[in-house]
Image (cartoon, rainbow, N blue to C red; front, side):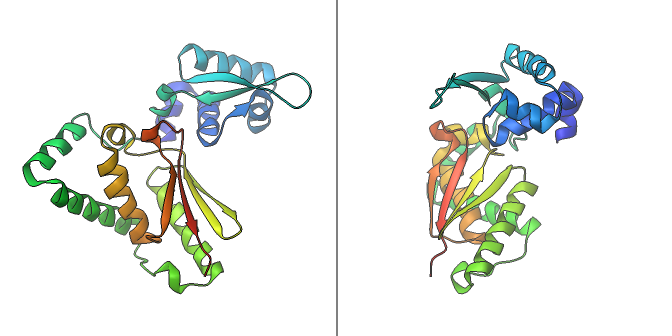
Length: 219
């Protein structure tokens, strides 16, 4: 996937976009990641801003001058992999009209099961595991998401684990079909693989720049 982006934008601009996919960054941070001087990075950022792939904003610091951060735009997000075709949204609506929401949800759940089964055969219930085993299992799920193109990571804070996805492979489809895609398909992926006891804190269809799922691993 990144090879295709690299062919179009070049290695340096691709590195910038991939870095901003995970979180907004300053010029200094990008310079450190790329191991090149700030002037060279600024040239690439100017190009990306001119082509509406990246935008910038300032954050007031406690002391000193405000810091300038760079972030991906919607256009920049759309460069990353999206597993859909233009008529998918219309197709979902037509199928729902023909067979009803309940049967369509059942189909989407079956699709979720098949997607996960292609990359993992593990179906051990999270509740039966120790804390360490739970963390390991959630980590394995994050690896599954990354193999599917979600650019995901896991953050642990005490007994709470956040799974943060910086890309959605159904991005355009989910914007107009949130209940079907986020409600049926992706929730089914999570509950079948990890646990059905989770909270969706942020998601792309609501205008967030990432999807965050929170799960408790307390006994």
